Image (cartoon, rainbow, N blue to C red; front, side, top):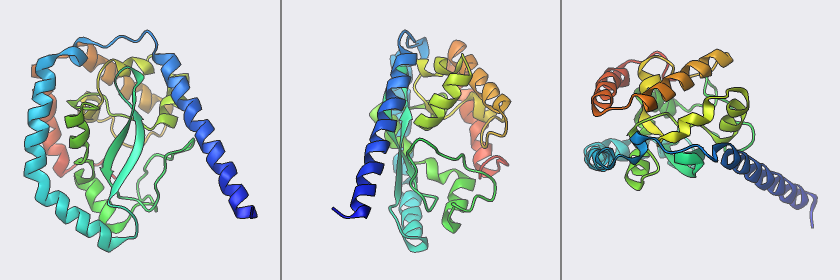
Length: 234
C-alpha cells in the first residue's frame, strides 16, 4: 500500500471517528429535550408543505439559471450538502447551492466571513440574495426543516456552542427553519464573539416559547425585504 493510500485511510478513519463523536455528543445532550408545541402542530406542517411546494415551482427557473452559472463559474457540484442538527437532535443533510470552492463537513468548519476568499464569483451573488438557500425548500418538504424556525448550524458548531451555552440545545425543540426570529432581529451572519451566538440562541428559544401563526407571518413579512438588502448576507 502506498503512503498516500495509508494517509487517506488514516484521514478517513479520523473523520469517521469525529463524525461519530459529534453525533453521539448531540444525541446525549438532546436526551430529555422534548418537542415543543410548534414542532407538533399539524397545521404548521401543512403550511410548510404547501408553501415550500409552491415556492419550489415558482423559483424553479431561478434555480436552473443559478445551476448553470455555478457550473460555468467554477469546478465542482451544483449542490452543497452538509450535516446539520434538526428536531430533537436528529441529524440530516441540508441542501444548498454551492457558493464556495470547498465542501466542508468535518470537525472544524469556519464561519463564512466578509470578503471570504473561499466564495466564488457567482457564489457571492447567490449568498447576497439568499438564492443559495432555495434548495432547502426540499428539506422543508421532506420534514427535516420548517419555513420558520431556528437556523441550523454545522454539527461541529453545535457541539462547540452547545458546550459553552447551556440554553443552546433548547433550540432543538423545533424544526430548524429557512428563516427565523433571530435572522430578522439582526443576529444572522458571522459570529465575532460568543455574545453574538448567545443573542441568536435567546431569540430562537423566545420564538419556540411564544410561537403562533401570527408570529410566523410577521417573520415571513420581515424576511422578504432582507432578501433584497441585508448587510449581514455575505
